[in-house]
Image (cartoon, rainbow, N blue to C red; front, side, top):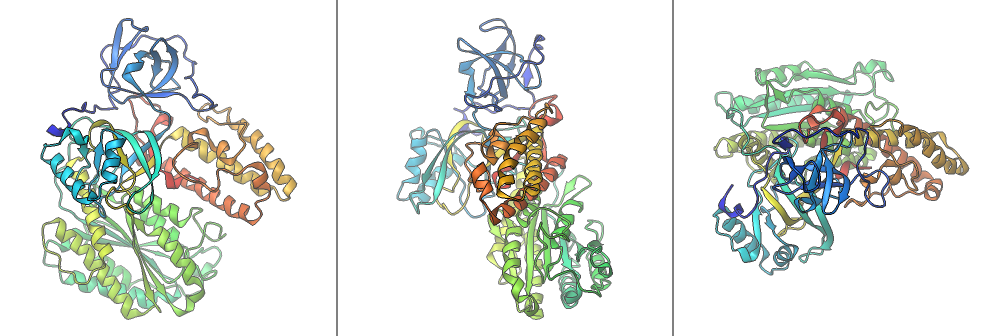
Length: 636
């Protein structure tokens, strides 16, 4: 820890939840924690302050200690003491002093964004000191000076700066850190009146001390092409093959060429609905470090386009992208690619979740969530051919949602489907990815006239790579104030609130949404829509028999049905505040909402079943209490 943080208590591992002698057994094995006042399903919780000793009785003999920031459930209050435990499914372990705890009212945490389009942020001791910076007329210069002071251990305590954000990106999925939001206030940024959150957060990494980085590996890139192989795509497949062949021939004798690796998946449509289409998706060339670019060149040369028409103009591009995300080996022999890219090439829009011939029931935005959760950037080359003129607006809207990564959008339209323009764009992208490798290896870039967003993408990937390689952790501070928007550039996000959700809670949401969709689809008339709320309560009450599903059976809104742990979060939902009357009179909007809820249900099942998402906050945590910091944008 640097000297400017010496006044803060060092963060200790959450994984080592208890130290010292074992805790005495407690007889009341079925006892449950206290509920938050006014809630029916939310338990009271606290975080431990440093020095939180556990006692057999209030002010009694000490039996052990908790590490700082250990999340605990509260079973009883008594004269300045709390009876606490690590899990609602386990007996309480003992008593801690109220003075050694911090109330944690909501399961929301903050996660840093990749600082590619903003400065590093400053963390203050009080809200007043944070607002002083936000209102300073020379905010950018002052911020840069404060960061420099923090880096050189010469902070002025009167300014209240506790720490500066790390220089490398801290990916919360790759290196988990707990930064609970203890309090927040909504306000407007003085620069341009953008709405923002002033947040009081606490921070520490899960693992004590610097992480053991793997053996140093040079930055390399894995690139998976996802290519439309329907009838109209033959010239573009040939162009892609020639571009890769020409570019890689120019670096074949250098170590740069050995650091970029290609694979390809072809996609078409539902082969059951159009038998001559042959396949929906097919791996054309696997992404492997041990094979060179000749493999994808040969594979594309051998790729034939479909000989029959698909069902409708849209193709199942999301199925191809989903396979590239989930079926590609991005972590080969325990060494993940430093840069992970998917390049989608198509002249058609994606089949939507409501299309009977679509394989996936999640939206383009939800597929993007799956990709970014794994550190994969999706770049879309959309061929706006004359044949698809009526489809272009829909396709662009969907592919823009699909192609977001670290606050940038990597959507590239090829007007009129020009083969020459497409050739230039493919070459520009591949050359830009080669420059990502060159710059990471300390070489000068060689590509010319590159889109600035592609330059930013390389910077974002390098920050991720350096953060993982060096074991960069979030600043180790006890309590601090920061904004969700960049102080000097409010158009950019600095932190994003996330819901720290357990497996059991995510299962609850998915199960309840399934019931909402099931009952909504079975109801037709306005009268039956009214009855559906009451029937839905009955169905959800049956879910309550499962002890892992904590549900509210007396809900008045759809949000109440899903769970109180979604209440009072800093996000807006057009769905969750629907009452019985509004639902019955929603008309055509109801169909749209049902589709969206179905998509979210499928997304939650995918997130639930991905073991890489989940982490235990304490030793011996049951599987259902492992947690995932889920982006709020994934909420219904």
